[in-house]
Image: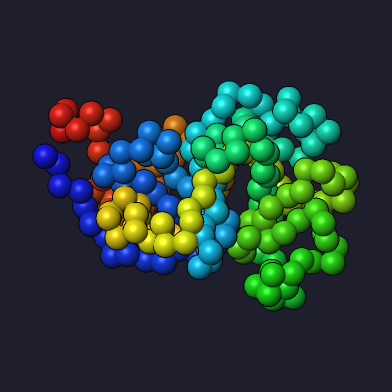
Length: 207
């Protein structure tokens, strides 16, 4: 039996990545990378960012086509409400101190009120029901996801303590990176021992 590398349990924050460990056998999350949108006592919300549907974002929501990442496919965001669409975007520049203060307090920038809600520095939720022209030009690389991942109170903590997930910092470009290699790429940039799993085989018997 393969021993899974153990890393210290870290409480996730909005903007962090949850990376599934080989110990997580749920097929919904096998080798997934989840971008955390919200983590509170009431639960955790995130989207899987390394599974593609094969359907282009432009075909799914044509009126937003000019704002989507080039060639972006709709992501399979998770098993919860798979028919629901959620959009994330990134900014060209780091938000101002005023914007960061507003997002930290749960508010929105007045310029993008109703269209953009900051999740973490440089990443935010985009309201697809709004007029695309109202979104600040600095917001780029918009991508949509069908469904999301969710955990109830204490549920994710239990999975973290069981070694089912690692929590790592997100890097610029993770939302637009190659989905087929993102799980391995995120692990490869971590310090030991996590980076040792970057070459973990699909079939452990081949190790």
